[in-house]
Length: 390
Ligand SMILES: [Fe+2]
Ligand SMILES: [Fe+2]
Image 1: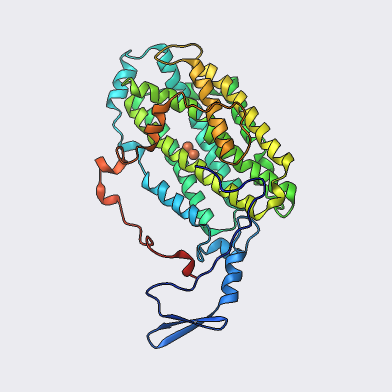
Image 2: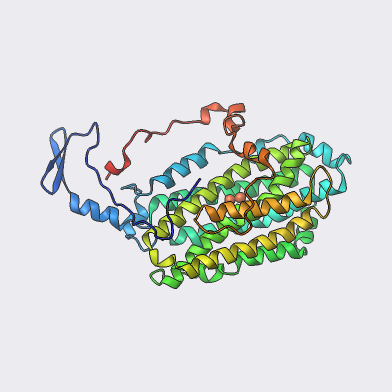
């Protein structure tokens, strides 16, 4: 997936069409007239264009914040539907086998450690993402469809938190012990502090007409969706899914598969919001700011490598530490490339090609295919030319 802007962001094209099918409409000069039975409605095209133009990622019209129409950011709606297609519920995933393996000594200490790190790290990280997307990103967006997709993102973080509680409950892990253990691991503390250090100021509400503040906002989106979700989550995901491949803790593995697919959508949504923000506010995208983002990612990668060394202190259980360190670099470069930012390491090959299959074989492992198919509903706006719905 490549981005659509480069060093010189394109201006956003505010196109407006009045040629909807199945609607009796005719143009009369600056007006379009809709005929519905005995009634006709004359709509001012200039006003409609102004409403569309007034819908912006930030600093948009208040009405655009509340009204999803006219739909301007179509891609956000598409990603929303993509997120919805991956809907899943943790508590229906069978954990019997996991509980058996966990409580009968079937796992080695290294394998148990990876599972504990997974539960310990993500129990805080999911909360950090959900809270930041709500209070830092969503709160500042002024286009209803962007807010709508972000709210789905936040809801999915709640599902991920729920999955961790389902794991803890099923395995009978001592919650207090896990909490105490993880609050003391320096690499976890450093990762969390690194990503949240800019958040308090943004949560207070800042003047987003100022370039420096817009850059802070852009950096927060980048930090949450590209550095944290896009880079700092993946090595531990890969470790747990590697256990899953070896038929160990398969219930947890299944949940992490679904989570990983959710994360790939969150990364895509974050990148889309960021690219639209920059297209509308080219003053953000200075060479200095681009360098600042790359530096931010560099720091995130270093912290993540330290964390990987804590999760897998030495090779074993079918895993090689060096592969995970390479994987961190590979993911960081992918996120940077998605925003036309220069690579940090130049790693071009995914050391875990099998993981891509896990993420993208959506149909083979669709949550509802093996469950209640009636949940799947058809998209009612499927064939609508949304620009016409003003
Ligand atoms: Fe998550
Ligand atoms: Fe996420």
